[in-house]
Image (tube, rainbow, N blue to C red; front, side):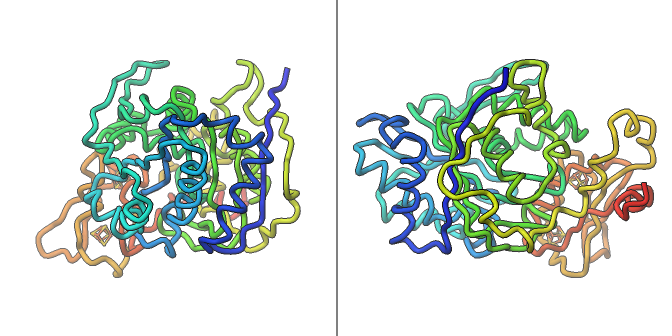
Length: 379
Ligand code: SF4
Ligand code: SF4
């Protein structure tokens, strides 16, 4: 039997603080009203995407005005909101809060902004994976997940499901990349973590999304969309339809089976609010790595030595060293006399962590000649 989920979609032309509470209020109404998620006096942890230290206009992180609007609705309802995330660990979290506008917004709204690196965590062993989840995520009465909708060179899409990977504190995220280097295994890990801590509500910020080589080096694209659902999988599948992304190339969906047999993308979705076709995706481009994901699994095993993705560093590099610090397998180093990091390709696992943390968009993920051949549609 197929699962049944409702996804609410609404137009939202910009991040105008006066309009956002009204539009987010409509999303709540489509899903049964705020009272069906939160009771008076409950603690609500809001989990945005605070990947790294970029301004809201750079579209790498959730826009603080979306979170401000959610906070105000929660407060009016008598709930106790807080905000928490664990960014990539190559930048001080305080710097991330400052640049993304979250410190100022949380101070103005008088809500706690929690550093998940310092709150302790619980360890879990699930389906062959070992990982920790930060304590505030485990102890909140309600979790509201507020992802930024972006492309991702590794997972093709990052939205509601993938955003819960940020519940794993700091450095451990890098270790997990190292331990599970293949796209398929990493996709399974993302699915397991999400299923372990499924949020009660997901509200996706796609007012201005990111396309191309996301999650940090892509291009801002105006979609004018806010989307919400209790079901993060249904929400992400709907976003795939809006963005014209084939869900079978997103590596976590196939591990999110509804009934243990059928694929997650068999879920039955009812759209409330605005129809999918009302959103214009003509300007939206998938990542350059997309076609590599379309090679069938059995062929990937066979062709493994000839298919690789590795970083290429351009002259935009300012030698800040973040990529060296962020590489889980020490494949990057600073060599004497070199003006940018040097890659030892033999060690590289193609995890894209360096690409994610580069502040200058100096890193592009390049592909082996065979993958380029596939990318050009000749296979
Ligand atoms: S060089 Fe970049 S892509 Fe390669 S393993 Fe290190 S962080 Fe990952
Ligand atoms: S490539 Fe980017 S992250 Fe690496 S040193 Fe240069 S500017 Fe810094």
